[in-house]
Image 1 (cartoon, helix red, strand yellow):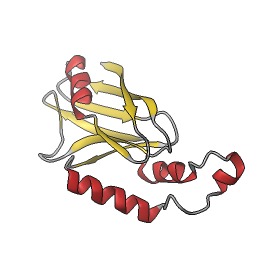
Image 2 (cartoon, rainbow, N blue to C red; image 1 turned 120 degrees about the horizontal axis):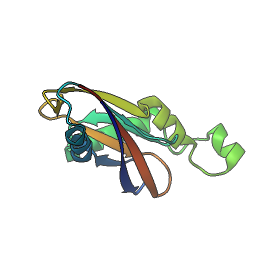
Image 3 (spheres, helix red, strand yellow; image 1 turned 180 degrees about the horizontal axis):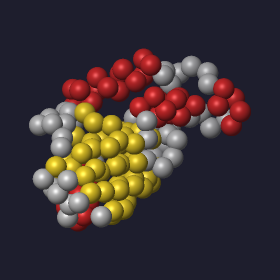
Image 4 (cartoon, helix red, strand yellow; image 1 turned 90 degrees about the vertical axis):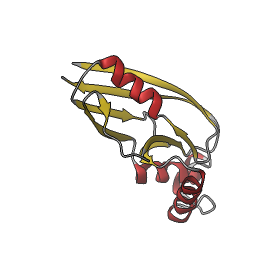
Length: 138
């Protein structure tokens, strides 16, 4: 069984982090599988998908760590070529990655107690995003 679905989001950009665990879990429920995988994918080059405890302190820590790894206030060749000012967004998204695969066991996402699936929009403007969720299993 394979089921594909999309999650629609409106984001603020600039590192906006949104918990997408509930809609991903709903897609797993629609698939009616007992065991398999759920893949969550962001089409586009300025967003990322990962897991984290969705708690304000650790979310702020993550934003600060990402700013240290790929600062928003330094020159990027992308900006010189395109003039859109979001070179840092592309670098940040590439570092975290566009997708995540989570095992499904006994019909549920095999996440840890404090672990949620999040989408992070690194672009330098608000956006409407569609996240692809594909569930495979038996």
